[in-house]
Image: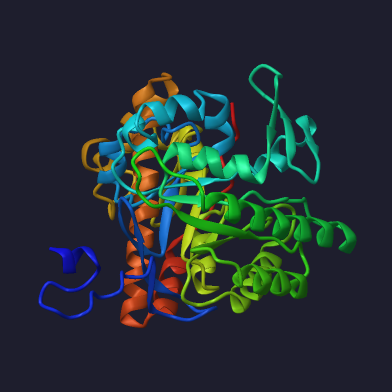
Length: 398
């Protein structure tokens, strides 16, 4: 027993080293990748999509339904949970997993995106950022250290460092300033995180955000400098904030080419099904986006033949399912005609079923993409998807 406690194997050999948090099974820095991300609440097979549970809930779905849809890992939001119900309450409840009834991995963003999305209520300083709460106007000051402390209190599996994101296009001076501040904040975040504990005592992975604006050379520089820091993975921030799609993928490739291949990359806040495939082709491992849930509430379904607006009169007597390739509850049980009736009548079941279908569609796409990477025919898989898939304009929000 004494030998085992000292770290020796019970049969006399040395104890093996713990498995790394990420194993790259296929691919390289800027090619389609398949990997294994090991967290305190399970292994995530990448590429993977994270449904957005901003306030600790994927709108309209129970944890069991989220799991049935094929979800491996969820995303939640540091800023919103800080305001309501507060990280102290969640810690006293045993952490976010227990609080929301989800036993799989959770990643939280740091609150940096809210510097953009709530910029009218934000005052940026070197020490951190002051927010005026969108709920009641009270002031909250979020530093890199506090962002990590909140995520430790939440007890999530992956905590993301605080960054300074800016809209594009931006001047080279503004891009450099935001990138350098992000690096300083990242170092402060990682230093402080080393002293923190979660409610359960389970370890927490740390992802650092790569900025760099719309300049590929700046992206590569910031990625190389971030890649030298002692973190478990990386998030590509400040993309899809005003630049053209072709620029997005050029910038993502520039960053990924400069990052270590043996740590995961997470592209923040994108996107459509076609975006996910483009991101995978550029070497991205993890994605999140509100589209499958938000668009469901506005009547849009993602299908293997493209997007579908259930509000259209053409579906009023359509007995077909949303997608004959899908096996979710909405497709197995209900016709387009019935789902349109529910949506037109304002019935919550319409929102729930469209959300369940859309999340299932995204998870199925990720699973099939991984299988294609394993087979070595990802390009053919993408070509077949694009041949069938037609993306129509999003339904206007009522």
